[in-house]
Amino acid sequence: MFLSILYVLIGLVLLVVGGEFLVRSSVALSFRLKLSKMVIGLTVVSFATSAPELLVSVQAALDGLSDISLGNVIGSNIANIGLVLGITAIIGPLAIDRDFYKFNWPVMVLLSFGLYLVLKNDGVLTQLEGLLFFASLLIYLFLLIRRSRKFADATLEEVDDSLEKTSGFKIVVWLLIGGAALYFGSELLVKGAEDIALSMGVSEGVIAVTLIAVGTSVPELAASVIAALKQEKAISLGNLIGSNIFNIASVLGITAMIQPIAVKDESLMGVNIYWMLGFALILLPLAFVPKKMTLTRPKGLLIFVAYCIFIALVFIK
Image (cartoon, rainbow, N blue to C red):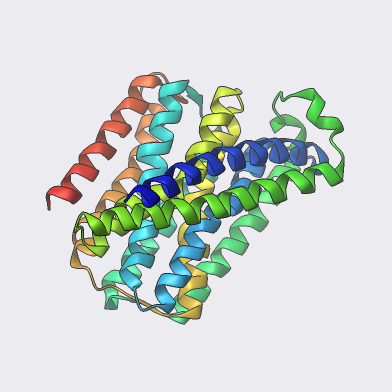
């Protein structure tokens, strides 16, 4: 048990370090590519911080533990909004740009409902369906970058000017350090958390949607909290929506292409997926209730409390 707790603590430290390097390299990269920070958050940061979910899900599917693959992604998407976005908004109010509800949010909701319909149909995410999800991610990224090129001058927010002069070599080194720290940190955190849960006699499904999901969402939490503290607000929001899109379209897409994913735990489809849809849908009304286009501290507290209720219900059940 002591070793498991040590793994969790070392994992958390590595994830915070990884998040710091990732945000720095992302902001520097946005200057180089003439892209808005929102786009960098939706691409570079999301790919790197969703890598743990991908590794965990592929390994679990290959081991025949499909509930961990699905539970990990469903739980991570709930955690990204309820836990990460909630805490980030509590730290400081987040400005919401128009691209959020015109493009990014609808894509996240469409993919969430797409996953629900596919699983509700026959309880299996097939290789063809996985391919379709992955193809949808490529289309989304193409449209995202094309849109950002169009509005590049208007959407490049104020950032740390010193990062504008960052060399390409330094950006690559920062990305590699950040990616490696996130990878090893997540591995240690998930291993430690799983060992602790097993020693407590908790089921595989509960481990997936709680500890493993939170463990693999810690990179998003680290990157978003650091970005919020540094006032890089665009990355905070873009990172989370991008991660949820990436989790469904790429993590489950690639995993299903390697090994079809079957639903075994009834609570995943009977309860947890509805929580995922609910958290995705609630973001739009929250964007428009006063104060408009701002995710204020009370709104952040509301979704964080909802997340705590979700976790409590999972363990009570």
